[in-house]
Image 1 (cartoon, rainbow, N blue to C red):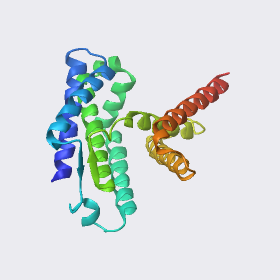
Image 2 (image 1 turned 60 degrees about the vertical axis):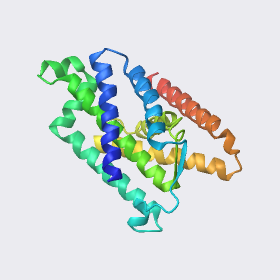
Image 3 (image 1 turned 30 degrees about the vertical axis):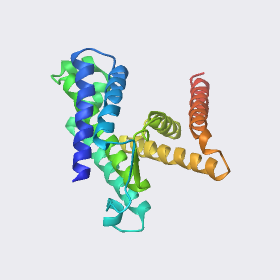
Image 4 (image 1 turned 135 degrees about the horizontal axis):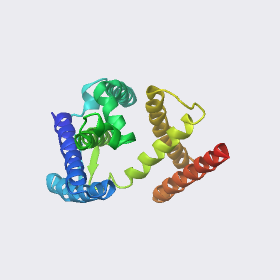
Length: 228
Protein backbone atom coordinates (compact mmCIF):
# COMPACT_ATOMS: atom_id res chain seq x y z
CA UNK A 1 0.00 0.00 0.00
CA UNK A 2 2.81 2.39 0.88
CA UNK A 3 4.49 1.70 -2.45
CA UNK A 4 1.31 2.47 -4.38
CA UNK A 5 0.77 5.71 -2.44
CA UNK A 6 4.41 6.74 -2.99
CA UNK A 7 4.23 6.12 -6.74
CA UNK A 8 0.94 7.99 -7.05
CA UNK A 9 2.20 10.91 -4.97
CA UNK A 10 5.38 11.14 -7.02
CA UNK A 11 3.40 11.07 -10.26
CA UNK A 12 1.08 13.83 -9.01
CA UNK A 13 4.08 15.97 -8.06
CA UNK A 14 5.47 15.42 -11.54
CA UNK A 15 2.15 16.40 -13.09
CA UNK A 16 2.21 19.63 -11.08
CA UNK A 17 5.69 20.40 -12.38
CA UNK A 18 4.64 19.60 -15.94
CA UNK A 19 1.50 21.74 -15.72
CA UNK A 20 3.43 24.70 -14.30
CA UNK A 21 5.96 24.35 -17.12
CA UNK A 22 3.50 23.89 -19.98
CA UNK A 23 0.52 26.01 -18.89
CA UNK A 24 2.35 28.96 -17.38
CA UNK A 25 5.37 28.78 -19.72
CA UNK A 26 7.77 28.70 -16.79
CA UNK A 27 11.25 27.27 -17.31
CA UNK A 28 11.24 23.52 -16.63
CA UNK A 29 14.08 23.75 -14.10
CA UNK A 30 12.41 26.62 -12.24
CA UNK A 31 9.10 24.74 -12.23
CA UNK A 32 10.83 21.75 -10.67
CA UNK A 33 12.49 23.91 -8.03
CA UNK A 34 9.15 25.53 -7.14
CA UNK A 35 7.40 22.19 -6.70
CA UNK A 36 10.35 20.72 -4.81
CA UNK A 37 10.36 23.70 -2.43
CA UNK A 38 6.63 23.33 -1.81
CA UNK A 39 6.96 19.58 -1.25
CA UNK A 40 9.44 20.18 1.58
CA UNK A 41 6.61 21.69 3.64
CA UNK A 42 4.19 18.99 2.47
CA UNK A 43 6.56 16.22 3.55
CA UNK A 44 7.21 17.89 6.90
CA UNK A 45 3.46 18.20 7.51
CA UNK A 46 2.89 14.53 6.67
CA UNK A 47 5.82 13.34 8.81
CA UNK A 48 4.98 15.62 11.72
CA UNK A 49 8.66 15.85 12.65
CA UNK A 50 12.00 16.02 10.78
CA UNK A 51 13.02 12.40 11.41
CA UNK A 52 11.03 9.18 11.75
CA UNK A 53 12.76 5.88 12.69
CA UNK A 54 11.33 2.63 11.32
CA UNK A 55 12.29 0.52 14.32
CA UNK A 56 9.83 -2.35 14.64
CA UNK A 57 8.13 -1.47 11.33
CA UNK A 58 7.73 -4.24 8.77
CA UNK A 59 9.45 -3.11 5.55
CA UNK A 60 9.62 -4.60 2.10
CA UNK A 61 13.06 -5.94 3.00
CA UNK A 62 11.54 -7.86 5.90
CA UNK A 63 8.67 -9.22 3.82
CA UNK A 64 10.61 -10.64 0.87
CA UNK A 65 13.89 -12.56 1.01
CA UNK A 66 14.67 -11.28 4.48
CA UNK A 67 18.30 -10.55 5.37
CA UNK A 68 19.28 -9.97 1.75
CA UNK A 69 18.64 -6.32 0.95
CA UNK A 70 21.03 -6.31 -1.99
CA UNK A 71 19.09 -9.03 -3.83
CA UNK A 72 15.76 -7.22 -3.40
CA UNK A 73 17.25 -3.92 -4.54
CA UNK A 74 18.83 -5.60 -7.58
CA UNK A 75 15.49 -7.21 -8.48
CA UNK A 76 13.66 -3.89 -8.27
CA UNK A 77 16.32 -2.14 -10.39
CA UNK A 78 16.14 -4.92 -12.98
CA UNK A 79 12.34 -4.81 -13.18
CA UNK A 80 12.26 -1.01 -13.48
CA UNK A 81 15.03 -1.03 -16.10
CA UNK A 82 13.27 -3.65 -18.21
CA UNK A 83 9.98 -1.76 -17.86
CA UNK A 84 11.60 1.48 -19.04
CA UNK A 85 13.23 -0.25 -22.00
CA UNK A 86 9.88 -1.78 -22.99
CA UNK A 87 7.98 1.50 -22.54
CA UNK A 88 10.42 3.60 -24.55
CA UNK A 89 10.29 1.12 -27.43
CA UNK A 90 6.49 1.29 -27.73
CA UNK A 91 4.78 3.80 -30.04
CA UNK A 92 4.01 5.93 -26.99
CA UNK A 93 7.63 5.80 -25.85
CA UNK A 94 8.94 6.65 -29.31
CA UNK A 95 6.60 9.67 -29.40
CA UNK A 96 7.87 10.75 -25.98
CA UNK A 97 11.49 10.46 -27.08
CA UNK A 98 10.71 12.34 -30.27
CA UNK A 99 9.15 15.14 -28.22
CA UNK A 100 12.45 15.61 -26.45
CA UNK A 101 14.37 15.63 -29.74
CA UNK A 102 12.11 17.89 -31.78
CA UNK A 103 8.92 19.39 -30.40
CA UNK A 104 8.01 21.00 -33.73
CA UNK A 105 8.34 17.72 -35.59
CA UNK A 106 6.22 15.73 -33.15
CA UNK A 107 3.55 18.45 -33.20
CA UNK A 108 3.49 18.26 -36.99
CA UNK A 109 2.55 14.55 -36.87
CA UNK A 110 -0.40 15.20 -34.57
CA UNK A 111 1.09 14.44 -31.13
CA UNK A 112 0.43 16.82 -28.25
CA UNK A 113 3.91 17.71 -26.91
CA UNK A 114 2.50 19.24 -23.72
CA UNK A 115 0.79 15.97 -22.83
CA UNK A 116 4.02 14.09 -23.51
CA UNK A 117 6.00 16.45 -21.30
CA UNK A 118 3.55 16.17 -18.41
CA UNK A 119 3.41 12.38 -18.73
CA UNK A 120 7.18 12.07 -18.96
CA UNK A 121 7.78 14.21 -15.88
CA UNK A 122 5.07 12.30 -14.00
CA UNK A 123 6.76 8.96 -14.80
CA UNK A 124 10.16 10.35 -13.81
CA UNK A 125 8.82 11.62 -10.48
CA UNK A 126 7.04 8.34 -9.80
CA UNK A 127 10.40 6.58 -10.20
CA UNK A 128 11.96 9.18 -7.90
CA UNK A 129 9.30 8.37 -5.31
CA UNK A 130 10.08 4.67 -5.75
CA UNK A 131 13.74 5.44 -5.02
CA UNK A 132 12.78 7.32 -1.86
CA UNK A 133 10.49 4.46 -0.84
CA UNK A 134 13.35 1.96 -1.13
CA UNK A 135 15.94 4.24 0.45
CA UNK A 136 13.87 4.93 3.55
CA UNK A 137 13.16 1.25 4.16
CA UNK A 138 16.74 0.25 3.33
CA UNK A 139 18.34 2.63 5.84
CA UNK A 140 15.59 2.22 8.44
CA UNK A 141 14.57 5.86 8.90
CA UNK A 142 13.12 8.82 7.05
CA UNK A 143 14.68 12.27 7.26
CA UNK A 144 13.28 15.48 5.83
CA UNK A 145 16.68 16.43 4.38
CA UNK A 146 17.57 13.06 2.85
CA UNK A 147 16.74 14.23 -0.69
CA UNK A 148 18.99 17.29 -0.62
CA UNK A 149 21.80 16.94 -3.16
CA UNK A 150 20.22 14.00 -4.97
CA UNK A 151 20.10 16.04 -8.19
CA UNK A 152 23.91 16.12 -8.19
CA UNK A 153 24.04 12.34 -7.79
CA UNK A 154 21.56 11.88 -10.62
CA UNK A 155 23.55 14.21 -12.85
CA UNK A 156 26.74 12.32 -12.05
CA UNK A 157 25.07 9.00 -12.93
CA UNK A 158 23.90 10.30 -16.31
CA UNK A 159 27.27 11.86 -17.15
CA UNK A 160 29.11 8.70 -16.11
CA UNK A 161 26.72 6.66 -18.24
CA UNK A 162 27.30 8.90 -21.25
CA UNK A 163 31.05 8.62 -20.74
CA UNK A 164 30.79 4.84 -20.71
CA UNK A 165 28.63 4.90 -23.84
CA UNK A 166 30.75 7.34 -25.85
CA UNK A 167 33.08 4.67 -27.31
CA UNK A 168 30.01 2.91 -28.71
CA UNK A 169 28.48 5.56 -30.94
CA UNK A 170 25.07 4.66 -32.28
CA UNK A 171 24.38 2.22 -29.45
CA UNK A 172 20.83 1.01 -28.89
CA UNK A 173 18.28 2.37 -26.46
CA UNK A 174 18.81 -0.67 -24.24
CA UNK A 175 22.53 0.03 -24.02
CA UNK A 176 21.86 3.69 -23.24
CA UNK A 177 19.60 2.88 -20.29
CA UNK A 178 21.91 0.16 -18.99
CA UNK A 179 24.97 2.41 -18.95
CA UNK A 180 23.06 5.09 -17.02
CA UNK A 181 22.17 2.45 -14.42
CA UNK A 182 25.82 1.35 -14.43
CA UNK A 183 26.92 4.97 -14.05
CA UNK A 184 24.75 5.33 -10.94
CA UNK A 185 26.26 2.20 -9.42
CA UNK A 186 29.83 3.26 -10.26
CA UNK A 187 29.25 6.69 -8.74
CA UNK A 188 28.00 5.18 -5.47
CA UNK A 189 30.89 2.72 -5.42
CA UNK A 190 33.35 5.61 -5.76
CA UNK A 191 31.74 7.41 -2.80
CA UNK A 192 31.73 4.21 -0.75
CA UNK A 193 35.43 3.67 -1.50
CA UNK A 194 36.20 7.24 -0.46
CA UNK A 195 34.46 6.67 2.88
CA UNK A 196 36.24 3.34 3.36
CA UNK A 197 39.58 5.11 2.89
CA UNK A 198 38.83 7.34 5.87
CA UNK A 199 37.04 10.30 4.28
CA UNK A 200 35.33 12.52 6.85
CA UNK A 201 31.55 12.04 6.36
CA UNK A 202 31.16 15.79 6.81
CA UNK A 203 33.11 16.21 3.57
CA UNK A 204 30.90 13.83 1.58
CA UNK A 205 28.91 16.58 -0.18
CA UNK A 206 32.10 18.42 -1.11
CA UNK A 207 33.59 15.18 -2.42
CA UNK A 208 30.44 14.53 -4.45
CA UNK A 209 30.65 17.98 -6.04
CA UNK A 210 34.35 17.51 -6.84
CA UNK A 211 33.74 14.09 -8.39
CA UNK A 212 30.96 15.47 -10.59
CA UNK A 213 33.16 18.40 -11.61
CA UNK A 214 36.03 16.08 -12.53
CA UNK A 215 33.70 13.80 -14.51
CA UNK A 216 32.28 16.76 -16.45
CA UNK A 217 35.75 18.19 -17.10
CA UNK A 218 37.09 14.86 -18.39
CA UNK A 219 33.95 14.31 -20.46
CA UNK A 220 34.18 17.74 -22.10
CA UNK A 221 37.92 17.34 -22.73
CA UNK A 222 37.42 13.96 -24.42
CA UNK A 223 34.54 15.37 -26.48
CA UNK A 224 36.67 18.30 -27.68
CA UNK A 225 39.47 15.91 -28.65
CA UNK A 226 37.02 13.71 -30.54
CA UNK A 227 35.57 16.69 -32.45
CA UNK A 228 39.02 18.03 -33.28
